Length: 384
Ligand code: AMP
Image (cartoon, rainbow, N blue to C red; front, side, top):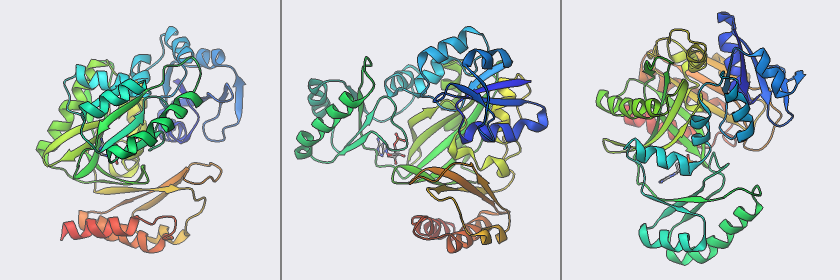
């Protein structure tokens, strides 16, 4: 089976590594160069999307900010999974909010802002503090502003306006103003749906962000009711989209309630732990769904965690002395804050996992992993 992935980053790479044993060949379409590349070496195999479509039995995507013409061309071939509408929704917060309303799914109170009048209206309708997020092309905390008090409003609007003016021409730019949610923690649900409508979800994962970017995910056995609540949201969104493949949903947890923050129509960073902590990893399950193969079990095998390596191209080799630890590099050149790789670690119990996380935190350089030790320490305290 041949699959073309739109996007040639680490997610396409990990898909290729995961499904080689199933005899699924992955090639990646680099949207920057317009070439079809080998997802591991990123060297060009041939030029042009058309040839990539011809090569493929199925086409999927590793990110949501893909130009609509490319999506339309792929969809016209009848090979694109998930469908273009699902991918577009992941790339536009306005469409995403419409979908959440359509599915009757709880989310933060919000207003869409395209003009100064909309901005003033939003200030009247919502209570401070607010977070304002670019509707398009904003991710990992980029294109975001926080408005804590009314006095700041006058300063922020020119910034937002400049952001719109500097963006792509002939596109209607907007920000979504959202009321800040006083959440207890951030969790995400990664799940998979096949073309027959069968769904399976992994356990909810607790996520810690550093400067708006995911830094640590921890997956353990979770409270059944909370898991059921998340699964219900997953099913309603995935069914509404007639989705095929892996879909991730990020939530804020407040007490026993989950509010959806955002959805990602693809394999997700908070699901990387499944490479060693679940029966079938998210990358394999995504391709199983896309290629009409039976879905694999999403059961947790043992408590597991993932630590992102951000902006570093080396880590001390001693981390591999910590039991049940694996290291995954993405083969990318070093840039500040860039996702360069990740570390997975597991334990037979949560306590053992926490202990191993602390061993890793002791070895990893504090300058690059500055929030790891305090976070793991708080996690250990919670378990005591
Ligand atoms: P996002 O790009 O929407 O994932 O936002 C990045 C990070 O900002 C999230 O992981 C949260 O930590 C924080 N954040 C986003 N929206 C809200 C909100 N409505 N209330 C509180 N924190 C938020």
